[in-house]
Length: 475
Image 1 (spheres, one colour):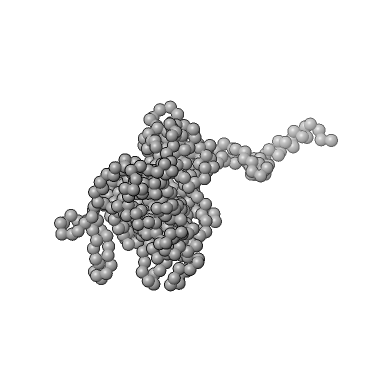
Image 2: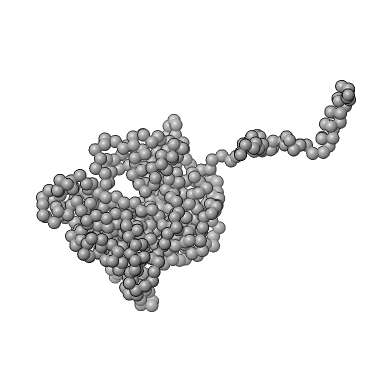
């Protein structure tokens, strides 16, 4: 047996050997010099090391101020609206469970005066978390993490899968899948990019050419276009099904002086009509929100054929049209780009594209007609942006398994990132009898229907990918 003295000398010898060699063993590594050791458990295996990085700053999506009651398209008799009801109303295409999850995780905030319980972001605004059952007050602005607007990216055709001279069964079935809503007066579709709205032979696969064959349903004639979208843009497209509804819709979207009808409900519904677009632009506007008042003119290029829309020069020698657009920045600049919301108050050709490129100086990603020079500089410049809340640089990283070569912001040739996301308009089918002077009152069967209709269209594939790429590391 080893005596007590021998064990003592053996321990002294071992300590001397360890002090001359390495200062740690496999069993007990020393804590890092820059942090206190933390034990982490993963898959029932304990690890000793530095603590994980703290939560990264979140990109917040600012909702419009709460308009109060009643909400467009809702004839509810409720005396109040809860926070979760307002968020569900604004994101009605998102699953209720996803919105509820954001409230449970504390990812929904509301602006508040500086005080106790608030979190100050960059010295610009103070936010506090709200619960799903908090009551909304008129003018209150809610901020939600951008992940609430992310939806699963599904594979689908971006263009009609045929090039024959006449619509075939596949084309008709494809166009019917785009219909979001139809009644006796209107049809609303979610137009994909690269599908032309107007076209002549041999370009037959356009909305107007296919409508008669694909969207007539039980009517003798197909619907007619009321408002148009550019071929490369996407989103909500409105069509009238009868001559009466087409006439009233064209009058609604015209710029003529509109005389009030004897029906007060119709007049109020017309005043509440609006469109909202989402766009990804290169750069960021100087002001976070505002009104663009810039008249537009059409000019011919030197070839004598190509037409281009430009800002009017107020020379008095050119014909110009008044153009008004409200805009609002949705979040900070990431990778040299910003998401903005556009609300056109007039309907001019290429109005949003020209206002973004020339009035704001931030052309839409994928708009090579009005922003070619900026696209060239944007692709060449190093894109390092600073997060405004923390002062740290963004680090854009690609989520695993996500294909970025489908026209997204990181592809070599991005597609146009302009999408008509939201549409609020009068319920034409309800008011037709009054507008045609067939009756002084609305039929009792129709009186229960809402005065306003609201539609929201999900973004196309390439814009969803860009959204996920620019927000995946923040949420």
